[in-house]
Length: 366
Image (cartoon, rainbow, N blue to C red):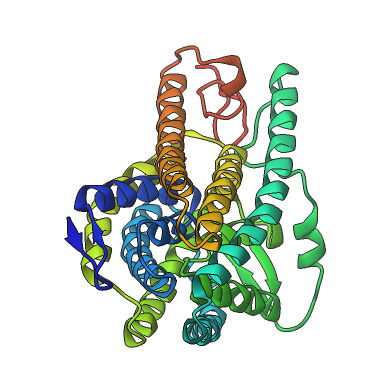
């Protein structure tokens, strides 16, 4: 067992497993995984402020690894990332200050778990609705024999946001979008504040914000968000370390597993279409709601109901394992599809095959 800075003993194997699973999920859907890891560390015995700081430090290292892989895949818009991170850094400072205030009142555990639960419900529900609607549209086109695009959205939110011509307007070549400088800056500030407070990279907010808000492809949103987290995470880690909120040993051990998992997750994006990534993100958020509710119940009952603690731990580990198996399964079926092998009917429009290439153009006959 590994003694944490707070005196809590945690198995290194468990920390490696958490890092690996969150690495796979994060590399695939562009998140740091803080909304899963921070509450889990609280249940494993970490105080709320220490769970937040340790997780954001682990997220920083994992995001660097993932963003490098996505850079090679062409999924990063550096200009968009740098502008967003400018607002993110200001937001992180505000979020850390809010958390430090709550730490002094002894309410950090309840505040972090309660606020994250409310936010996850709203975001997860919307993404589940939109992604399923987009997949139904892809299924319809597939049955009609139409070529499938790599990306499709059932929400027109991005058009309304990009119509806000608050000058100066900025064009992002790699992401193939343009938007108001102030809109992008505010997006970074809002997600940065949440990142500093919850100890998350902000990816479960920023990835859908880049996709639904600015109209980036899901692949570009994933890669650019990981690039942003690799920059903002360093600042967040430093601020939390200065506040005594980081167990560096635990963060490094989780990063060992994340280094492997992030490569797998990023590679898996090559074999699927955008809506499938958003669907996995939506369900990862919805599953996290149940785990967060169990953990919040354990904290609110004075940490005396052992069944709640064990249920929260079991659900958290099961949730992470399920998501990893789903992502790896999609990658395997994508590989089979690209080799011309049959795949289940429900997955035909989700994975990329020679008959339906990623650019949506019919394959030319030789």
